[in-house]
Each structure stands twice: as C-alpha cells, then as structure tokens.
Image 1: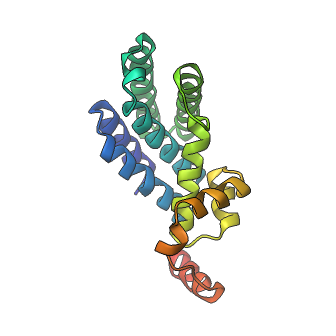
Image 2: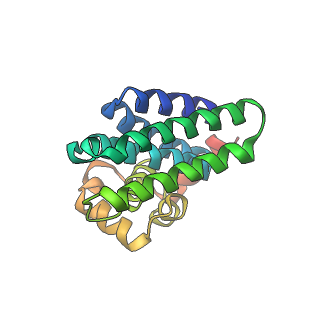
Length: 180
C-alpha cells in the first residue's frame, strides 16, 4: 500500500473515531514498514496506534484540549495528503512528523500512561515487525524502540508462542522474494 493510501485510511479512521480500524491500520502499516523498509510507515503506525489509545480514554475525550488536538491532527493529515498528491514528499513527511509531536504533547499533558504514548506505539510497531519475521535488532531499528524494551515486551505478550521464528535461510529466501 502506498503512502497516499495510508494517509487516506488513517484520516478516515480517525475522523470516524474507529478504534478497531486504527488498531488494524497500525499493524498493517508496521508490516508495510518491514516489507518495504520505510520509516514513514512506522510513523503512520505510531499515529494510528496513539489515536486509538487516546480514543479509548474517556478522560482524554472529555478534556477541552481534545477538540483542538483533533482538529489540528485532521488538518495536518489532510495537508500531508495534499502535499503528497502534489508531488511534495518532503513537506508531507514533515507534516507527519509534526503530527507525531502533537501526539507526544497531548500524551504528556493528559496521559496517564506507564510509557509515553509514542514509546508504547513504537513497542507495538516493533512487535508487529518482529511477528512478520524480522529479527529483534531489525524490528528495534525500524520501529525506533529500544531493543531491550522490545525484547521484554515481546516476551510479556507471549508472542514467541504464537509465531514460529524463521531460520536465517528462510529469512534470506523471504527477502529474495520481496526484493526480486
């Protein structure tokens, strides 16, 4: 899926406050980040996950800062889409980065999270990348999560029991298929 489609789907899901769709998109974007090794897909995954978590918290939705945040985020996503559609990739990516900063600020101001919302989203994205067959190091590098934290998170989620890890030979074969 291309970046423009990601923006469209993310904006639509957030606009409709569709929590299950935002979570699904977060996983899908993380998987795309691994397959295509594109950091901007990780950023989209983080945005989708963080928005889903915000929408799950009634105390955040009730705060007066929420309405301003919501309008600003929708505007940034729309402007990023317009930039991308006009062939302006760098400004589109800059708006996505600004959206991440906006999320981080709201999470710091209103959140009651054990981890910062962005750090938690990086862990989720890293776990999704790992589940797609990446090594722990690759998953940490691409997602921006700390390797030690990601390892602990994956172990706590019982993910190793759900997914069979791949041998180096299988990973090489998969990579050849992807990049051929």
